[in-house]
Length: 185
Image (cartoon, rainbow, N blue to C red):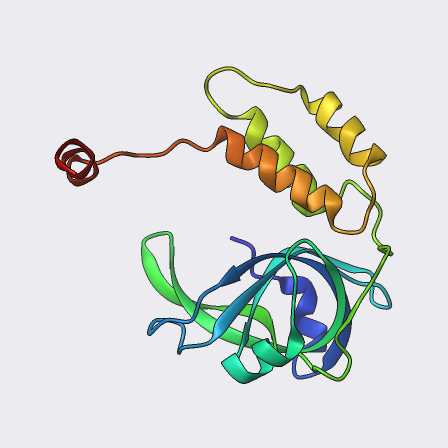
């Protein structure tokens, strides 16, 4: 399990990051009625820290003020903090410390036209690897996908391309209720 251990030395500090906004999780009761901003290809250039992705909560007022757009690369500062999660280690339940980013400073949030992180990023390579594990017909080879990534602008377009490719391999599960609704609608 990825605990983002590389962030441990920076706990309780604020660092500068860049990342591509790939998803926005809507507020609900479970997430404390806050938006969840999913950033991919996250990089702290001054510390040389690369993270696959992070989810950072943002309240509704700040979210509206930020006017964020999907598949745009942003520079932001965030505080490193930790949380504990129960895990099973050799059959024994223990609390494991995990690290996260929180509290984006809206005054430092800005678009970045080009990344300091070279492609393919960890995020991109993980998605390509997962696509290659799919059962059924593959539309691309790993080399073709990497070649396409290297030819695509590194402004968030790569992450959009990879997410669209990944979505083309995802299978939908239809349950009995879905089938009944379709038949009797």
